[in-house]
Image (cartoon, rainbow over all chains, first blue to last red; front, side, top):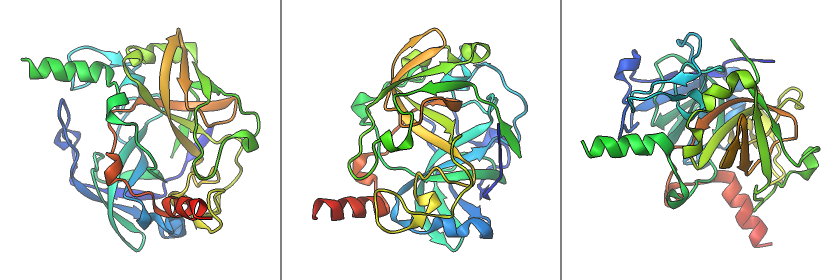
Length: 150
Length: 150
């Protein structure tokens, strides 16, 4: 239907998926750089005012998809749309990062969880949050509770 | 680079963009239905456990893009990546919805802000929030303050 064109590339500390923190309690605090192509750099005007950004990117090293995923956080399968599995019908990744600063067309960010060299397709401002007390985290919350009680 | 395939379609109360609440203080509380294609329905397994979902969709009625956008919320232009403008290099929309229920391959959700008939390309669980006191909302926060002081 539509074909995506990378607007830039993510530079991260991760060269293999095994290096990316996963599982219950995994926290993504790694710093990275989002290098936006010069021709798209005018699209970054005023982005410095936002503390957090949505980054949309391509799982460019995933191949094919499964409708049921077996995430590292749990020992049972779940529907792919109830997980962040890379093997999705449309291989788009989504990460919320903290914007630490900007150097020209490069954004310095915290919280990357994608592989080094990942193509970026969109950036959007993160505008509001769901209050924690209204959030239910489904099978992930349950898997975390099982892990804690082990 | 990659071509997106719709996994379903959004049914919403909005047939024209002018009907979608915009501007300072706009709240998205409209109910809608996400109808997932039967062949992708197994990917919804266990989705009921999550209170909120990310929905990725296509701005299928937007044509072309501008690197600077003039959002309805402000009288000055901003980089497209600092806005939610539909006229983006990759025309992907992102909405956080509350999951009210599921009927087979149809998700009943609250908080839709896309046009009726919009193609959906991905659904992901909404897992965590940035605490409100850590969030800066850039030009949008400023435009809202100007509006309030008018």
